[in-house]
Image (cartoon, rainbow, N blue to C red; front, side, top):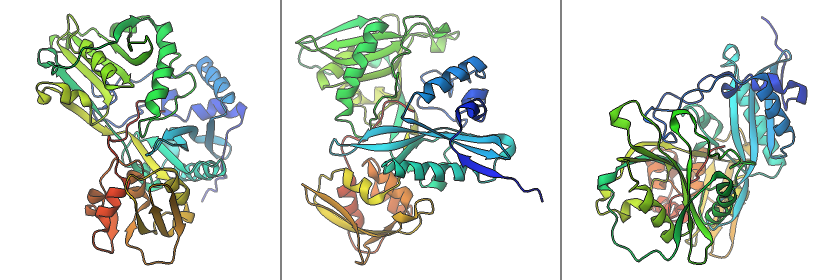
Length: 434
């Protein structure tokens, strides 16, 4: 039997090149399971893989990460060789009630093929959880590249996204009051200024939305992107001249007639219904197009209900988006608000990664304050840590989770009460990954 010395720790600056080489995006390996991706606007199931990163690109990335206090890398070393890599990014997420919670966004994860199934990922995740708790982050989130991996560590889907299509000739909007504002096609330089303003206002009112990563819009450009063509930018101004909505779209070239004339809306955000309607009104009736495609959109897109024929907007792909995981149950639950006053006593007994969460808790919301404390009262239900993560942002059904056995009631009516406490309208959504 060969003994291997294993270390799990943040990589040093001189180890970053080896750290990146354990990650799929740096080596050109697949980063997503082979399924239709709801974040991809092209006709293919998912976008093409990138070429392996060059040494110069890795050096620039390492330099940027070294200067970024929100980036926290973690690596697994076997006999001194880096065989696994992951990281968390400290972000704020908007929770029900409009408050923001500091959270650890798990990103860029991989174990090299020769060292899989040996527990390296579990060790890295545990170390990242401990570090996040030490930084005061009661919540962790991620976008799962493969659906069967991260439930083992307590994560579960909390938000969803869709890709939909709309034929231009069916895109007839119901009558509405005249728009007192105006639309303007802008260049990338102005789009870089406008997007952070619009996003900040949207984020304040959208459950599940995240703080932008550093340089989020720095890559916007007026240059063509191969056969995809240039990205175009549409701004809406209100009657006072202030920008209150933005959209990024392109008209990619296609070698086939079936996909020709497609307009892809890569991003669209608006701070009010008037700006939202105005942006879509132009984009769904753009000259020389026949199909509008919008990836990464909310499941409850209001545009559907602005159409004379709601069936015309066809969801072609859907997938989970953010997976949530409570690291500190009482702290996380008291940072969000609850529209309905009430209380529930619940037991968690399955949290192997954060054992301090195990026990019986009394959650009480009275409309002005929220408390969650350990109690010796009899639990009204037992809930898995995964189910609690799915409920946290208010977008999933307690009824469905109970049917699946992830919530086990011990009292009549408690599942309905749990649902009333946690659900929000509209559903939570975040507009970009990390």
